[in-house]
Length: 486
Ligand code: ATP
Image (tube, rainbow, N blue to C red; front, side, top):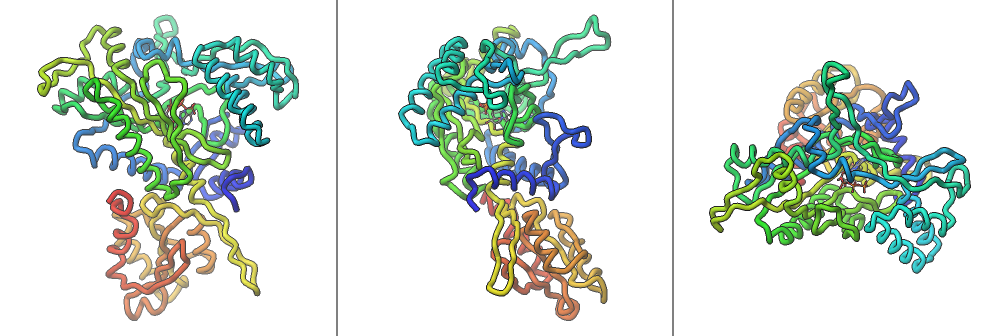
């Protein structure tokens, strides 16, 4: 089945729920819009993706360290960063359906329709108009484009639109014991600022020399005007960000370097280079002098999974201005003090998770002339698979479960392995295929005699015989981090 359609995506979402990867939040209360929970296998997969990022960015770079800053931060930080005044999306309401939309997304949908109808020229012209209106922050122009293009509300089918207004995406909340003296603080909309305000702490305590990086994984919150496409756009999500501090004037070299490094990282994980592309930004954010997205070909088309920005000295200079504290570095090589420039790489963990799910999911027809058969399989890279191996006694008697549990005890300290004795062996194999377990280890009567087991491979479904004494090494060689990072 092609990965480029709605049915495929619906099946991915249904599969993720059925097997304990992702659940709608607060489901028994009919859910909470654009918020999701990760289930027992989703949490494992997510943890493995975090580890893949942390190992490759922090442990494998001598000049990068990782921190974990608080979600609540001093409210002035969001003034300095520009979020209080500028972290807005242009929104528009339809007066008949009372539905709210992002004005730019309504226009992007129209561009997609042109492309689907083969109207390349119209699509390009409209894209240029949209880019210009966004670059000029011209809300009136966005409204005019929507009217000129005869864009209707998908729910009411009418063109009865309000004016386009700016909507701030930050979630405010109160901090303090009593309402009178409570301060307004924000749930952070990005993890980056927690890194910038700790720049000096880390540089000094870690004796870091430019160029160096600070990495962080953590939750971020955005009150998205409209959230859709499953875990693609959520109101609570997780980011994995690197801020890499460099000498001014060298930032574009580092930007190019990180672009290539990050693209390779994604391709190593999902294995399919054709599903990725770069998208250079037409409209640069106020803080950037170069910006690119790494896009993945989701079932609904190419969309951003990671952003790479050359942020100049904007953030550190702003914090210097607002806090009154010097955010400078003395560079002994050039014998000068300066505010470092920054190259940022920022990947959404949930979107990354979605690339991995979409990439791995396959429904295979295994029918032969005599028998109809099929299987659902998640072909995860073994290093990130939630469960590395399942240990399956052929029957529940004659000492086979005891032998299987001996193997479980050998492997479980270093690897997430699962014991399963319910149902026929064929059904158990299929269950493990459906959750992406790369190896099934079957303990049978021969195992009691000669201490060997059958290894059944998820992708090829081939089987081979292996000594129990060699199992640990096999699992290490086939699922260890070296298979992805070596
Ligand atoms: P978009 O244009 O899709 O709104 P963005 O350009 O605002 O994304 P950044 O601010 O660059 O995103 O954030 C970096 C990364 O964080 C994105 O590449 C994406 O993977 C992730 N991300 C941003 N917003 C969300 C969200 N609402 N839900 C899930 N992930 C998100």
